[in-house]
Image (cartoon, rainbow, N blue to C red; front, side, top):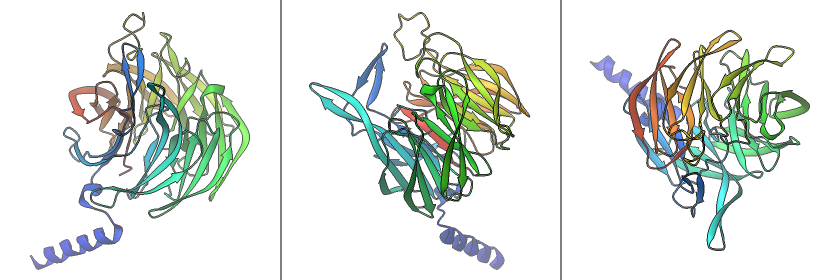
Length: 388
């Protein structure tokens, strides 16, 4: 008994030293809710800001998630649903705020913002500790595996912001001119490179990373049309892009997921056909499965011939560098965000218009709908899972 007490005290001391709270020690998900932009029979309605939120969700019980923090921070559905990330120690989260709503006569319109929020996840509850002003319309972002560097893709700024991370101290230390709009960026697992999606140019750019020096040597890869999002396999062998097609919206045509071979020379090796308008994209931590999330016209007018009341998740089997489409699973209206749990056994899909998450189960390469939905207070435009 005395040994058990000493063990518990030691564990508590370790927790204090590491700054890990009970809520943050469990697997958790960060969610960005956008209440400024809504859709009514295909019409985009812009409302005044002030009701957005960033949620911290405990997923220790994956079929019964719990919201443990609700931060009143602005968030935007405009951009790929990867505008937030959690560092490898689960200590901080970084959130890019891409768009603001401003009054335009009697109406409201969206304009690019430049805010990057830093959230302390070791606090209970989590809290905002810093707001950084970066370039225009910060969108997709990524934190490197070492946890000491972050990259933010700035669409309107046509640049990549470089952030240094030292514990909870996050600073803007550089900017890389990309020449074109960049919507998403992701590190390779070795941290030596990054891929940035140039959606409007139908290209993906390759970046070199050396410490906190990030270099763009004008090396681009042609992908499918409008590569809005990009992810890298856990083993670093391939990358996938969500080729959204019609400038980021549905048009009834099939689209693609491009497969990029990351071994030298880096090049595109395949295009996998997926349904209309893929945006959310994620790799299983196990590396054997990936998923794309497709809107299929679910936020368009019901009069459009390609309208569907729901979106779909496309399950992709990954065998080395071979990617094969397995099956499609219906989810909610305008699905955006997607995240695997750290053990790879469940997938959360954020249904923007339904204000909830579909919960899918993963068994090997078989993915099925559990039938359970997790309600959130607002419209989930983005989500990322903790690494552990």
